[in-house]
Image (tube, rainbow, N blue to C red; front, side):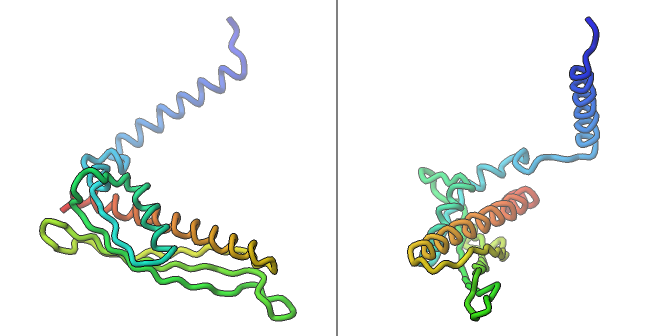
Length: 172
């Protein structure tokens, strides 16, 4: 059976992927979640946030990305503080903002529940922008959507930092 251009390209691609996997494996690369204990340690984190819409959204997103196990007692407590800013951008000729930028600065500390000792603390920042509008409902909807996107982005950044810390320190 003659070899077609498509099967030749697929064969080359498979060979290239095999070569890359050999090189990556040889350099000691291990995916973050392949490190033993990372996923289980993340699911044992209890998230504590202050009152407010954005902190609530952040806690919900963190519970999702950390795969929080509500049936097991927490081994860790993640205490969070959130500082929000809303800055006008792109002023029009009449000096009215055409866009706004929502900034979140999230400081957090991870505490070992058994010892009460803070084992890790850090801070993440994120900025998300949205268009302003003269329609009141549209403006509220745009602001709320921006808060949801900012909380989701901050949760992902925190998840990555915590997973890296747990992988490096073995959860100690």
